[in-house]
Image (tube, rainbow, N blue to C red; front, top):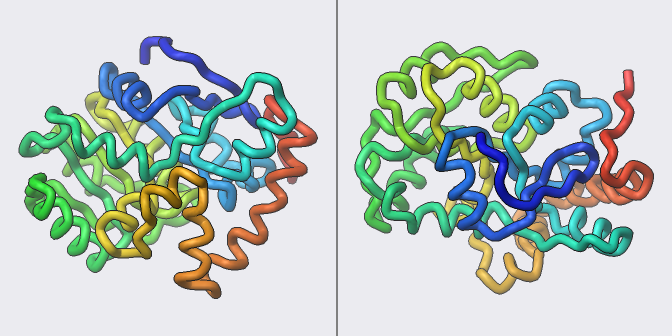
Length: 251
């Protein structure tokens, strides 16, 4: 991918400092992988080797984590602005090149998620055939998915959207980047798809702008998300210690 735009390294990961259209333009031009690391996964940089590798080899990340942005701006003079995966996806689905038949390919975690995603896409004028959709299996430590590679290589969509969980979708994005026979734009935007399709709680625009998406998720399912976001608080001391440097890897 050609170098253009302002970037800021945080914990060794290259974040684009800009708006959604700038990010989409950049990855759409030459292809590549965009990752949207949330705090619950980002805190694992020091000990999750596969996730760490995927973030470092992504073309760039967008600053989705409200906690990361808050801590960084308290510590540093070169302030950044949060850009959520949800805002990014809203901008992506409005682009004429994305809305063309066959332009996008969707990878989702379950049949239910895929059903709701395709129904939502059809409702907003982006009809998606069964050939443009794929339900991912449960991946192990090393990701291998020859069927997905074949499907995407045959369809050759300009955009591949990964709506899987953090820590998995980034590794899958890297796998696709390394093994596909061409260079699509690979968008690892996770739960943003579920927020719009109704597969998870809907997050109002105002709440997303204020960085309160985590609160809506926690209230909607405290057992699933409450502890996840509470544990994410360990990201703050990690940023305080390393700032722009990559954390030392733990054994």
